[in-house]
Length: 255
Image (cartoon, rainbow, N blue to C red; front, side):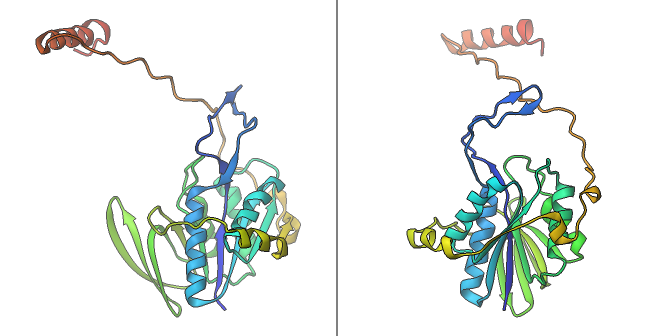
């Protein structure tokens, strides 16, 4: 049986306005969603299961609040969900170490993740996890074909396509264009009540919190400066050119 796993992250809704208070992001009443790139990973896992059989398990690391997003993944069609509880602030190193510990005895055939998260956008968790598991990985994937244990992968390379042949076990990160993620259906939502959602602690994966020292130190969090108002130049073209030169010379000091 093909063992498919998807790494999921809970992120801010991309439509939410980010508020920073005293150097920290204040979530307030912000809405959370499945990281959009992870939805491509979920959809691809479901398509591969439909074609080759097997089982899809979605996994996340974080607080119990992430159960909502895991339930959404189950409603999309995943078979199982796993929440590895960790209440402290995560960074790519810690996330990868926890996930690698979880996968040690899972004999995963294919692990799929989003290419990056829309909040921090490091794109590191997938590759770091694969490195710790000593399995190959391919990033920015836009196509996957399985033939037994052989895998042909297409990946986006700055607008071009690179074709890679490799084998299972494998980790891939999904890029936009890989597929079109489905919406949870009403029957799918109803079935989530019968699907397992397991909650694990670090002890359950033989990991001690003392092993999770941060590798990244956050200095500060800040929003980009507000953009200045633009100029609307009036009059004939020659007059507009004169006014533009005057602005660049006298106000902006660029010429």
